[in-house]
Image 1 (tube, rainbow, N blue to C red):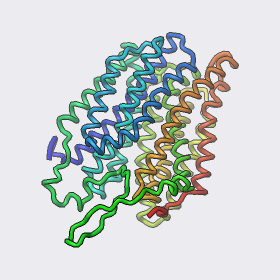
Image 2: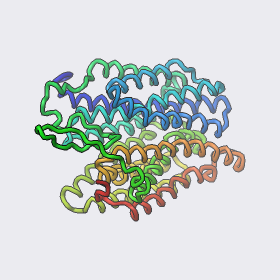
Image 3: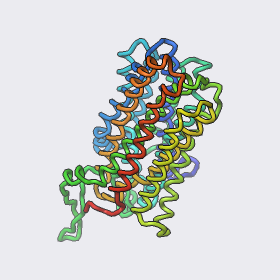
Length: 442
């Protein structure tokens, strides 16, 4: 028992929830601050897309090394080092849109640092949280991403207006340092030596396994770990695996495009001021926070009460989430008011989060022993979606700006929202046809 008489594992879960929240405040904050600074400096949309997508190159490169480092050094230490690195980068690097090289290097560093965070979190949770608490612990931790994005959209535009874009960097750095201090003070490694039943309770197991390791009995009554070969070929040619990969790509394409370009859409597409939109601009991400947790609760209810099979539950929630999101995305450029844009983006992101109760949990259904491998493959696809989507959106807008003499017409933004909209329809069809809730890897 520690702070406020909370058990250690609860405190760890709360701190990891806050960590994902702070990370997404940083991501949304950069897009807001950079958009304002770049527009003031006359930077074109294509160049903005390049800078905004640079983060994801670094993020993609460090996910696998992050998992390896967390296993070798310890998730607690790696998580602390990652936060310190990106916080210092935000604090030291000036927000000058004309100093492109410095910004590119800085965003790469922040991307690399944050790429270590989620593998470290999974490692820490695997060590601290017993199996029967992991689903809700992981759900709560990851939902911090969406709450952080909502808080960033709510508070940071006002900070930009009062103190300027550079103040966002300093505020994000301060949040990162504050969290690092709390983590350093309160986070510890699980005292396994004091808990002989820890292994039986599931402590110390990795949520991101790199190798299957069933136990075999020895003659003296003990046990040893027998490593088995990971079926890479079977995984990479599996249709259910590719159904997960395709849907992960689409989910993150839509999420990252909206996260990075919604501020520009509000400011230039609708001629609205983020500062004057009040709390309404946080609704898309708050909806994600709510629907993410609702999806998990509904899925567990349908399965445990035997309302639907696992397969039907995954397909039902994924299809509902992605089809409703596609309709909202296709309708988004039609609405020319603040309320209409907020409604469409809220519905789109909220139901995409609901769809995660389908595809995002499915890797644990089909490959519980290799869930980390399937997760890594699909997450890599999700990160590539950020690189492709954010950069291509900038190029689309630059071309539209020339063709339509600006970005204030709905035609300028149609392709931006139609691409993820049609991707959602395609992905839901792929998951409906090829996915399964049955275990297919022994």
